[in-house]
Each structure stands twice: as structure tokens, then as C-alpha cells.
Amino acid sequence: MAAHDAIVIGAGPNGLSAAIVLARAGRKVIVYEAQAAIGGGCKSEPLTLPGFVHDVCSAIHPMAVASPFFRTLPLRDHGLEWIEPSAMLAHPFDDRPAAIVERSVERTAAGLGEDEAAYRRTIGSVVDAWPLIEDALLGPPRLSRHPLALARFGVTALQSAERLARRRFRGERARALVAGIAAHSMVTLDMVPSGAIALVLGAVAHAKGWPFPRGGSQRLSDALASYLRSLGGEIVTGTPVTAIEDLPPANIILCDLSPRPLLRIAGRVLPDAYKRKLQRYRYGMGVFKVDWALAAPIPWKDRAVARAGTVHLGGTLEEIATSEGAVWEGHTTDRPFVLLAQQSLFDPSRAPAGGQTAWAYCHVPHGSTEDMLPAIEAQIERFAPGFGDRILASHVITSADFERRNPNLVGGDIAMGITDLRQMIVRPTLRWYRTPRRGLYICSAATPPGVGVHGMCGYFAARAALRDNR
Image (cartoon, rainbow, N blue to C red; front, side, top):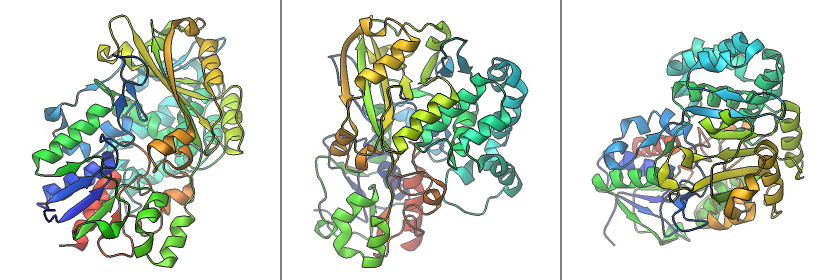
């Protein structure tokens, strides 16, 4: 094998981002990917019927367009095109109009009636502060260049989503909207920092949007790979790394791996004390995911829901909190909170003429193999009677299936680790990207700033490696 300055294990968005940083610095980089295709959790496949394009894991990408690193990359020149739906998010109800998150704070707030002013103060203030606080939120814990703005954010953010929703909003619609956004955190709504997740994702919907790539999430991974190759980087697929010792010599090895698979391939070269810390790293809820090929769009009772690329199905704050709490305790529920995406309404390339796709998941206990398809479809029917009549085919991925497809997602945890307050800071240890083994680094979502397709974990890990290897 030809000699390389740096090796990256894993061609997900963080691994590709790390490789790009190194290649831009003039290092000769090679990426080894175990699967036949690049992308990790950011890929697309024809899971149901020919001609229908489905995102295997991540589908909507607010953090990608918010990423300070991705903004520096010429990804459009490498085939990436973002689609922004006419509304970012819809949250339907049984007996009242859906709450709709528009790109405009003002229009969104106006649709919330009695909570118009509260929404402007709570979410609008974070939107206004976003340019000052994004670096602090999308990186490892560090001194902020704008400490007062970050402190003002922290006063509101360091509380649970339930407390935030009840203290800041009076109406059921606004409270449920906050709960649904907070549920992306994959922790219960009475835990810190679920409130911060609600504020960040809610603000990003206005500041940057909740878009998705034309043609599928794979296009984002492909654009990153294309740019890396233009810099001279190499990518080898279908090449699992089973032991760090088997790799060719390199000054830098970056692992786009969560702690458990990292221990499997590098445990023999790591000190026992550090290995014990990685073994204590906590993984959280799993997900059960469904993709559908449809004969027609989802027939929402509230037609405004069809304006949104993302839909949250769960009813009230109380209902969502109960569902998520049950999962956290190891139980499933007949009325799960469902996150749904309907990209084909805005991207005709996702389905043959006349057809549509839908993508959805709910949270389930860690490693669950339970079939949640009937419960998920019942939740959709609740808000869109007749949905079942439009199904041509479906494809499910259980939590156990997710781990088999991608060993980083232990127990089906697509966040690669619980995002509670402690593990947002100690992620996966206080060394963050560095390990005690000289030249060996971690660049996965198990490092700060954590979950999301933003490449920032790879960016900061590669920067740390370059500082150590000047």
C-alpha cells in the first residue's frame, strides 16, 4: 500500500469532514469504509419499490445548513442542491388547526394566537442571537467570543422541555409544538437539556431552515466525497478495519466510530483506565423506522400539513411526554410520538410519476425488536384517515436492524449516545477527540457537539490531530 499521512475509518459525514480538513492542510489521506457504499447514517436506497428513493437514516438536515464548516465547502459545485419546503414543520391535532413552523418567526408566531408574543420572545430571541452563539453550540465546551449572548441563552435553555413549555406558553398548540421539537433529543421531556434542544432546533428552523437534499440524503455524502477526491483524498469501500494494528503506518488515525466499535478494533492498544471510561459510555433509546411507497400524497385532515417537509405526530404535550417517558423506562406504547418526512411532495426525483414516499420513525427501548408498524400507521391514520389505502409497499428497520447495518448505532441509538447534560460535556470522555494512544483520535457523533449531520465532530477532531502533529 502507498504511504499516507492520515487514515480515517468510516465514511460517514464526520469521517469525510475530518478527511477534508486534513486534505486541505496538505496531508495525504485515505478513508476506509466497511460498507459497500459511503454515507454512514446519511445515505439513500431503493428500500421499497423500483424508482422510489428512501433515506436510510437521516432525512431532514437543519444542522447541515447551519454547520459553520459545511458553509466553507463548495458542495453545490459537487452536486448538492438543497430543497426548502414551503413550511418547515407541521404539528397536527385532533380537534384544532395544526401548528405550522414557517421560515418566518413572525408568521409562525401569528399562527399561535395567544402565544404569539411568547413565541417571539422565546424562539425569536434565539434566532436573533444565533450568529453570536452558533460557534459555542456547534463545538466542544469552550470560552465563548460572545459570553453575554450565550449566558442569556443558557438561562432559558438549561431546563427541561416540559418546564420550558409550561412556563413560557399558555396554549396547548404552542406547548405541544415545543414538546415535539424537544423529542428529537431522545431523552425524556422532564430532563435537562431537552429544553435546549427545543430552542436550538426551533431557532434553526427560522435562521437556516429545515431542508433536505434533492435526490436523497446520499447526495450530501456524495458531495463531501467528491470534494475530498478533488483534494487528492482516497476512499476505499467494502474494507472493514478489524484491528488498528493491521493498518498501514500513518501519523494520524481518525475513527468515525462510537465507543463500543472503537473498543473492538482498538482495545488492545488502549490503556485499561481509558477503556473503562469508554465502557461506561451510555447509549440511549433506539428507533423503529418505516419507509412507504405511496400511490398518492398523505391525505391529511388539515390540508396545511401538506405544506411541511417534516411532521410531528403525537398530539398534546402530555401525550408526547407520556410516550417518551414510557420508552425511556423500557416500554413501548400504542400511541408513539412519530417523526415523519414527506420529501417527495417537494422533490419529484424521489418517486415515479404519480407516486410519493414517506419516511417515519418512533422511539423504542434500546435494542428493541418489537414491530411498531401498526402503531405508527395508526398514528398517521389518526391525523390522515385513508392513509393505509394509499400504501403500495413498506419497509421497516428495527433498532436491532440499525445496529446490524451500522455498528456505531448501538441498540439502534441514532444519536450515538445519550444526550443528557453530563454526556454532552463528557463525550465520550473529557479527552473528547483524543485518546491516550498517540496519533489515534475519535471523530464520530460520540464527540462534541454530538448528534446531527453537520460534520463538526470530524472538523474539530481533525483540527486537534493537526495541532498535535505539526
